[in-house]
Image (tube, rainbow, N blue to C red):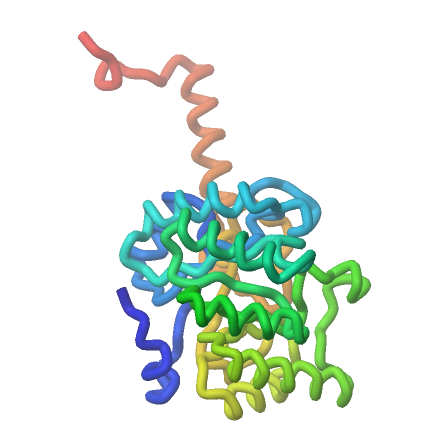
Length: 263
């Protein structure tokens, strides 16, 4: 299991991260030799059909992360803490993070945002032996506060805040930063100023690594890709054609044939 991410950053070796939400997707991601797998709460939209990540529960995350762990036992696994699982109190955040970490076999948990409360939680989780990845910029759990899925850090004030949050998270012990939908120049500044790896999604070319959603990069069950995503296959059309062919053969009596039957 590769976890020398600090060395990779130091040597300018890019880090690849892929989301995975179940056994087969994680198994394929590991076989492709990605360095990191993220069991993201984006599973709410791409797997469970929810309108956002907000409906995702701790039980959902544990269920899917355990399946992903079975599929990728030898890949560094990061699991999202879902909506409101660490905001009510620090004590609840510690309990939920411990439960998620212990039951899934993950190597790290991911928290959104860089508030003083989150920074305090990073410090306590790190001291307790739970590595933390911090998600900054466009944080999907706060989409209703932001007023939609919008690029963050465009103003001088908001850029300064995100940079400050990144530095605070590093000082508190975070092992990596996910930077989502911020200007490329800001992502580069953060990447240059922190010693921990930055993983970009919609944040340009200069992060230490990149993450894409499994279903986006395969165009699997998605109708429209965000600007920052790239589809490397078209699984939707391949799958639809295969199922249509199966249905046609069933109706025409061409499946099953004798070779598919027990005699």
